[in-house]
Image (cartoon, rainbow, N blue to C red; front, top):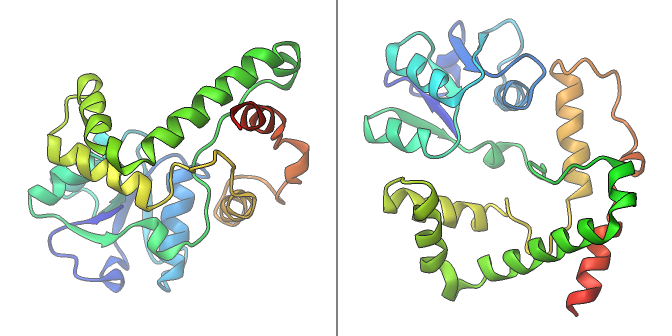
Length: 215
C-alpha cells in the first residue's frame, strides 16, 4: 500500500518530495517508481531514499523525513490509525503482477524430487483450505497464535490475501505477471538489460505432480 504524509492530498503533491523504498532495483523501489510513473511522475521529479525495513520506512514517514513509502501489513494499519493517508494499493495501478513464489536449487530439486513434490502437495492442500470461506475464522486464529497482531488487522490481512489473489487457489504462478514484474524491474533500475526467458527458470514439474496426486 502507498502511504503518504498527512499533508499529501494526491499524487501530484509528491513532486519534489523525498520518498522511501528498499534498495535501488529491488522490489519495493521498482514498484514505487512504476506506480509513480503510472500517475505521471517521472524519474527526477522526486527522490527515493533507500530504507530496507518496513519499520524504518514507517518511522521515516512518521518523523516527516519522507512524504510517501510502500508498506506491507500491518505497518500500514498502524499509520492509518494515526491519521496518515493511503493513495491505494500497488495492485490498483499495476495490473497483472506476480509477487510471490517458491524458489529452489534445480540440482537439489532433481535429487530430492519426492520431497519437493510433497512440499508442493502440502502447499496445495493449505491453499484449498485457506480459500474455503468456512475456514476464515480458524485461519485468523492460527495466524494470531504465531503473530500477535490485532484481530481486526489479521482479519483484514486474510481478506486482502484472498481478494487480491496474492495466494493462488491452484498454486500456479501467473507467468504474465512474472514477466510484467520483471519488465518493471528492468525499467526501474534492477541492472538487467532484458527480461530472461521464463522457461529457463520457471519449472512447474513438482506442482503438476502434486496436483495429480490430489485428484
